[in-house]
Length: 246
Image 1 (cartoon, rainbow, N blue to C red):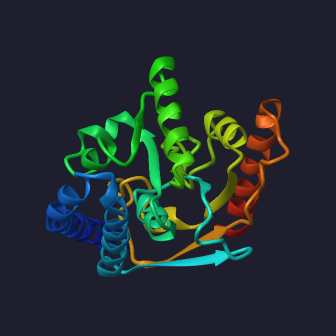
Image 2 (cartoon, rainbow, N blue to C red; image 1 turned 90 degrees about the vertical axis):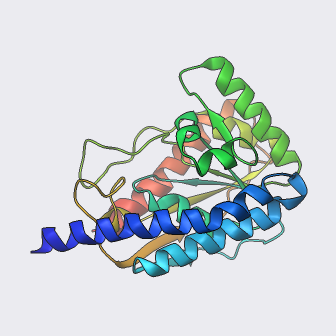
Image 3 (tube, helix red, strand yellow; image 1 turned 180 degrees about the vertical axis):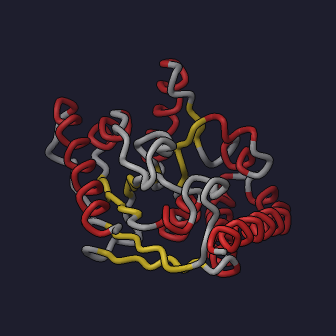
């Protein structure tokens, strides 16, 4: 019975996601026509994510280690276990934030609007693509655009509960180079509501707990410290995830 209910909820969630995507599409199309409209675009993404979560019965509960400065540019690094993760980061983000994501998302009819404009696609198997992507992201950070990134690069599809995969180096080198503080974000139990896309185990309503760690300054770090910074962020997220998610 539980399995049936979770499959039914997954089917219902897909209908809600597709319906709202169609309703918001005209606004997304209009707001991606100019950089001057990116703030409105992100307000739309935030509203879309909030309404979608509400209708599928999911509540995002954020706990902040310290309050974040609303007008400050951050690089947000989060673990990745669910398609809900992008919604969560949209709700968390402020101002003209943008995402760095795999170029496969260009195949999505809605997401390609973003990744052809405000967001930055990357093919991690191509050094040239990675170079161009991080160059673009660096330029955006200099403009005051916050960055949302999942440093694992993908969702762990082999383990349930999912485990953290090794982090990529790029975001941490970039943070040091641009002297941008990093905010680690632990998505504690989001996988329980929707693991990956929810197709295998189904989905269910409930509260998703998200812990936002205190920003880590990179002002006094050099590029040689990028591995240490990466390991520190990994440990913060991994320890919080394993201590709280069960």
